[in-house]
View 1 (cartoon, rainbow, N blue to C red):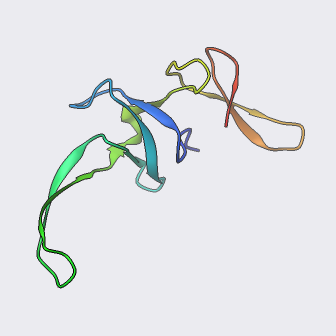
View 2: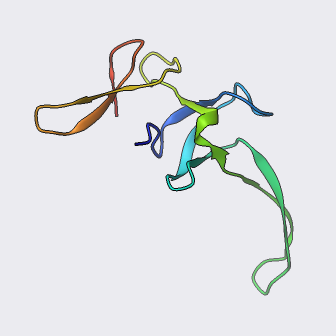
View 3: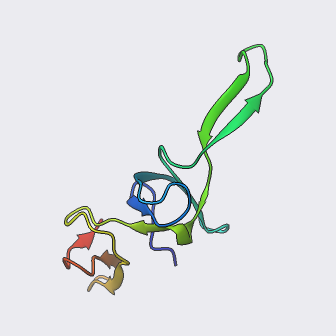
Length: 103
Protein backbone atom coordinates (compact mmCIF):
# COMPACT_ATOMS: atom_id res chain seq x y z
CA UNK A 1 0.00 0.00 0.00
CA UNK A 2 1.21 3.50 -0.82
CA UNK A 3 1.52 6.06 1.96
CA UNK A 4 1.16 9.04 -0.40
CA UNK A 5 -2.15 10.20 -1.85
CA UNK A 6 -3.38 12.98 -4.13
CA UNK A 7 -3.32 16.49 -2.54
CA UNK A 8 -0.70 15.47 0.06
CA UNK A 9 2.19 17.84 0.70
CA UNK A 10 5.57 16.16 0.09
CA UNK A 11 9.26 17.03 0.17
CA UNK A 12 11.76 15.80 -2.46
CA UNK A 13 14.56 13.70 -0.95
CA UNK A 14 17.04 13.39 -3.84
CA UNK A 15 17.89 14.61 -7.32
CA UNK A 16 18.02 18.07 -8.86
CA UNK A 17 14.91 19.18 -6.93
CA UNK A 18 16.14 18.03 -3.50
CA UNK A 19 14.55 19.92 -0.62
CA UNK A 20 11.67 21.40 -2.61
CA UNK A 21 8.13 21.01 -1.30
CA UNK A 22 4.97 20.63 -3.34
CA UNK A 23 1.50 19.15 -3.57
CA UNK A 24 0.89 15.78 -5.23
CA UNK A 25 -1.20 16.26 -8.37
CA UNK A 26 -1.45 12.65 -9.52
CA UNK A 27 -0.41 9.20 -8.27
CA UNK A 28 0.45 6.23 -10.51
CA UNK A 29 0.34 3.27 -8.07
CA UNK A 30 1.17 0.60 -10.69
CA UNK A 31 4.33 2.45 -11.75
CA UNK A 32 5.04 3.68 -8.18
CA UNK A 33 5.37 7.29 -9.42
CA UNK A 34 3.87 10.65 -8.46
CA UNK A 35 3.56 14.05 -10.14
CA UNK A 36 4.32 16.95 -7.79
CA UNK A 37 3.20 20.52 -8.58
CA UNK A 38 5.94 22.93 -9.70
CA UNK A 39 8.70 20.30 -9.37
CA UNK A 40 10.70 18.25 -11.94
CA UNK A 41 9.90 20.27 -15.07
CA UNK A 42 10.71 18.88 -18.53
CA UNK A 43 10.40 20.53 -21.94
CA UNK A 44 7.86 19.08 -24.37
CA UNK A 45 8.02 20.01 -28.07
CA UNK A 46 4.53 20.12 -29.60
CA UNK A 47 3.53 20.40 -33.24
CA UNK A 48 1.07 23.09 -34.24
CA UNK A 49 -2.56 22.04 -34.69
CA UNK A 50 -5.70 23.95 -35.64
CA UNK A 51 -6.37 24.77 -31.98
CA UNK A 52 -2.81 25.04 -30.65
CA UNK A 53 0.06 27.11 -32.10
CA UNK A 54 2.63 24.53 -30.89
CA UNK A 55 6.08 25.30 -29.53
CA UNK A 56 8.10 24.28 -26.51
CA UNK A 57 6.05 23.75 -23.36
CA UNK A 58 7.19 22.95 -19.82
CA UNK A 59 5.31 20.39 -17.74
CA UNK A 60 5.83 18.33 -14.61
CA UNK A 61 7.29 14.85 -15.11
CA UNK A 62 6.63 11.89 -12.78
CA UNK A 63 9.00 11.21 -9.88
CA UNK A 64 9.64 7.88 -8.22
CA UNK A 65 7.62 7.52 -5.03
CA UNK A 66 10.82 6.55 -3.19
CA UNK A 67 12.23 10.05 -3.81
CA UNK A 68 9.43 11.85 -1.95
CA UNK A 69 8.37 11.88 1.70
CA UNK A 70 5.09 12.94 3.24
CA UNK A 71 4.99 16.24 5.18
CA UNK A 72 2.61 16.35 8.17
CA UNK A 73 0.10 19.22 7.78
CA UNK A 74 0.07 19.78 11.57
CA UNK A 75 3.77 19.88 12.55
CA UNK A 76 5.19 20.65 9.04
CA UNK A 77 7.87 17.93 9.43
CA UNK A 78 8.55 15.12 7.00
CA UNK A 79 8.07 11.64 8.38
CA UNK A 80 7.09 8.17 7.32
CA UNK A 81 3.51 7.72 8.56
CA UNK A 82 2.36 4.76 10.60
CA UNK A 83 -0.96 3.09 9.90
CA UNK A 84 -3.71 2.31 12.38
CA UNK A 85 -7.20 0.83 12.09
CA UNK A 86 -10.16 2.62 13.67
CA UNK A 87 -12.96 0.76 15.44
CA UNK A 88 -15.15 0.98 12.31
CA UNK A 89 -12.42 -0.77 10.25
CA UNK A 90 -11.17 2.32 8.43
CA UNK A 91 -7.39 2.51 7.90
CA UNK A 92 -5.77 5.89 8.77
CA UNK A 93 -2.30 7.44 8.59
CA UNK A 94 -0.68 8.89 11.72
CA UNK A 95 2.35 11.20 11.93
CA UNK A 96 5.20 9.58 13.88
CA UNK A 97 6.51 12.94 15.17
CA UNK A 98 3.37 14.64 16.52
CA UNK A 99 0.87 11.74 16.67
CA UNK A 100 -1.82 13.56 14.70
CA UNK A 101 -4.03 11.87 12.13
CA UNK A 102 -3.16 12.76 8.51
CA UNK A 103 -6.29 13.23 6.42
